[in-house]
Length: 79
Length: 254
Image 1 (cartoon, rainbow over the protein chains, first blue to last red):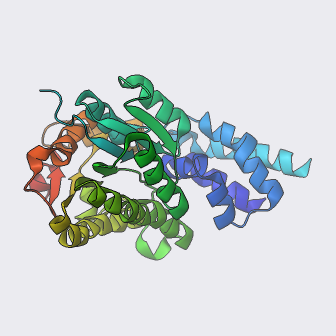
Image 2: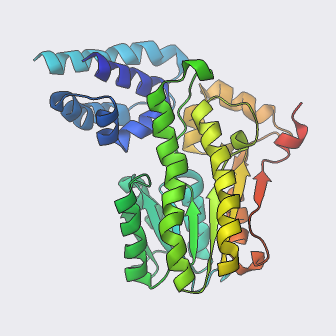
């Protein structure tokens, strides 16, 4: 779960990394050695969340967005 | 003037947005048959809608430029659909912000190099033989001012773009004699979704405009104008060169 949160935190803060995730989720999952469950979440609901973020996320909003998305990940992986 | 690329077949990687999209549109307007090559399928579809596109003069291909089989297939599909490859524009790239070198994660280095440098290598590797078969061609690689200067907010991006400049020189030295011209452009700041997203905030973007000698960053259409010239027969004596296009930013840098 921590690796996936690390990915989402980076993707919230950096649009370039976000694009790498959105258009290469399978590559990212492989490079971060995500579990099947984490990879499925990344290429499904998490991708939709990342796609919906503003471009860029303003600096003042980054932490709140990171916490919101991390919360979604925790909810999904603990359910 | 139109028709400068009449009867030409062009592959444009990174054609789904920004500079790549502007190049696709410009090539289409000049009569080329255009292959929009990108992983961003929705963006590629949008590019096609912004062009005067028909099945006879345009198509899109979902491709990861760092995947050798997908790149080989891209060239094969282009030849199958349009009969040849005359022009390759290597525009696909990612820009991931990093801290200073000693703190850069290896995985971000690898990700960037795979797309930005290996991707250009693979596209050249498979397009050049097809160009030679049809009598020659023109390759335009998109580098960056970051590839020429020891500054930047991404270590792997800057180094990958420097690699693109050198790959251009090496490829030109090997294939110009066979009719394939290979050139490179190094844009400064350009108003694209990538740049707006990679600057930390709207305020930073505004500051960047104000600090520029022209009072603004470039537009994707302005970059496409230079790429068009290099791709066309008007640049028939040009190979192995890198063109800075930055509105005077580098010349004015202290």
